[in-house]
Image (cartoon, rainbow, N blue to C red; front, side, top):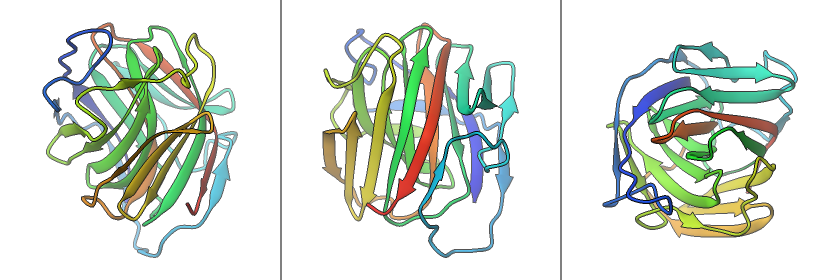
Length: 224
């Protein structure tokens, strides 16, 4: 199943150093989606995508709150309102997978963005950084909750380049192991058995200040 979706994102941000408080935040499920059912259940293979072809399968959408799609040979997610979360999946299916992408964030740094694995019916793992230098791994549920798995708040890392500079992200989902790499260095490694198979994707969100522009390029998907 391939889905591209967006949701209102309500976040209690107690201080600039963290955007998750009390262990979880709640999403109101306000789905704006396009679905494509795929009859094949075999695992997908390795591939690369430089987003130069608008027909490569990630779709596009324009809404009063956000825009996502192919622009300037990259994939863009632009959000124009506070507390909003947008993701795009490509119609692939993996048990174990490594996903790598080049990212760059423009505009206000009060945001989060990154990679998705094991997406199925609104459930997925989310590997995110923020433009002001924080990271985390999260589990999003179809009930509209996003739960941090690497602590109660995002963690700072000097490996994350700020100021609109590109960052290379890699998410590894292998069995129960979830590992997150930023610019070639591992920043997090945890175990979780909740989700075992699903699609991959890219995501971005805003917080209280609103408005963000995130670019994705040179996606590589392979066995971990």
